[in-house]
Image: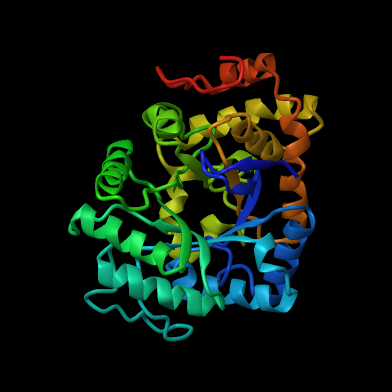
Length: 342
């Protein structure tokens, strides 16, 4: 396993990490989660990602059960959760219970939501705590002060953002520096062959100016880049889940056919490297030096093993080969290139 610093912090995270989005509580129960997480941990994965909203809190409960069952040393783990969409899970088939202060980035919800997440995870602290989305209704200084409070109380070691704009991140960082508070360390953006501008262009100044780290999600574009949707949406895939119908637009939307055509044209390049399409897509993300870690979302140990093979494929990602991929994608952002060889 390769380990990378989280931005300019002193924390090292595995280049490939494992996340609970969609799968835990939806496709993965506690026993399967134990097998998946054990396969990842045994291969050197140290970062495990979660959020209060995943499975209505069930994803954190399952992950906490795995930690307790596995008995791994806490110092060997980097665990995250994300706060924004709270609520209370009331059981299968029942609606979530939402109070008026269960959402957003108010001081109240950040503190209470973090406490609830830690209880579900059965942990005293998380290593990384993310503000899961920007909150236009809460003053940014209130949010920054609350995150500083949580770190100073030992409930988190680093804090960051997810799907914030570069301007919002920079404003939060400036407030923290002005008020002598702990600034944000990392951002969790979507990044893959079809979703590039934010990581490659918008955030480009932040990597050097504030030392921003990135924990990227959806490296396979919700499975599109694995090739499994080339002939339609198979039963049991995340795009077939009732609660994730909004993802179907990735395949069935107006851009779907063109993207699927590119996926098919990438297949021969993957074959040249004796790689699967998923390995090629993940290795492409790893080739960006501004990516701290790539979050995998596998729903079984076989997918974990396949995704881990991307590490060897990444070693073959020469500048020349990346340009051949670029010729297929034909979507290079216009500025802010941060590639090896570009």
